[in-house]
Image 1 (cartoon, one colour):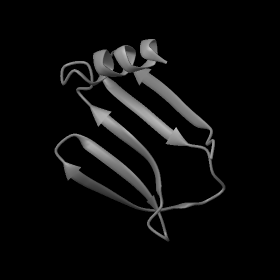
Image 2 (cartoon, helix red, strand yellow):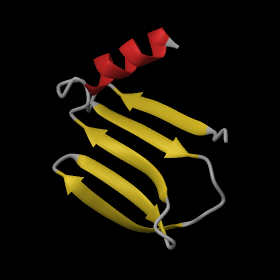
Image 3 (tube, one colour):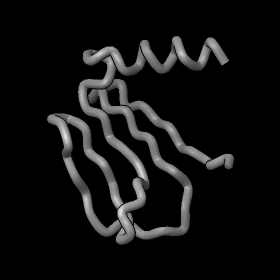
Image 4 (cartoon, helix red, strand yellow):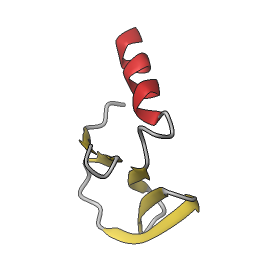
Length: 70
C-alpha cells in the first residue's frame, strides 16, 4: 500500500517534519522519547512526527543514506 508523505526540514531550528497525508484529524500527541513528537488520530493511527535536533542526532544523514539506496 502506497501512502503520500510530506517531509520538510527546518534547518534554522534543526527540526524534521514527517506527515502522512490522510483525512483523519489529529486528536492527541505523544513524546515517546525526548525530542520526538508523534501526532495521533483518535483511533491511534500515527499521522506524523516531529524530530527535534534531527541533524545533530544523525537522523538527516541516515535518511539521505537510505534514500540513496532506493
